Length: 100
Image (cartoon, rainbow, N blue to C red; front, side, top):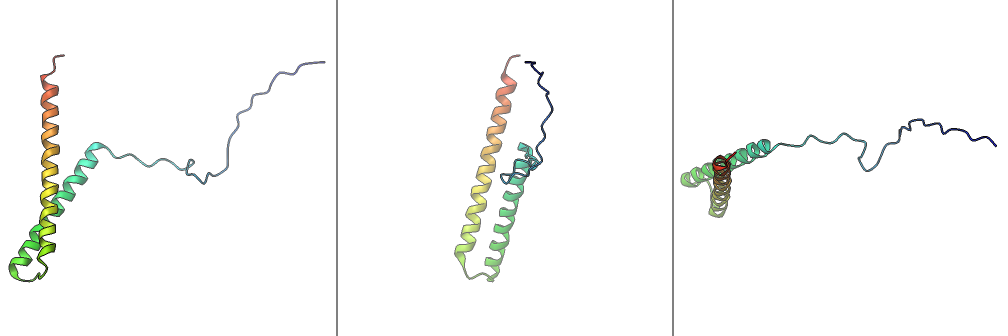
């Protein structure tokens, strides 16, 4: 009885997966992109709050609660932005204090 050597041929898959494995992965956003998006959203909330406050002062808005909610959203977003900035500055200062 003669023993034959194994023939190694590459196998390619041509089937489409329903789980999405064959689709190219979406590009991941960088930290800078998330930061820019957050700053734009904070700015949008501030502008929206200012607009509603001006309309309330002009007497064009009857619902005061929507103005208060918009102001609180803008305030919370600004506080969060300031906290992120403070943490980033603190981390930078800590890195600068490190001895190489």
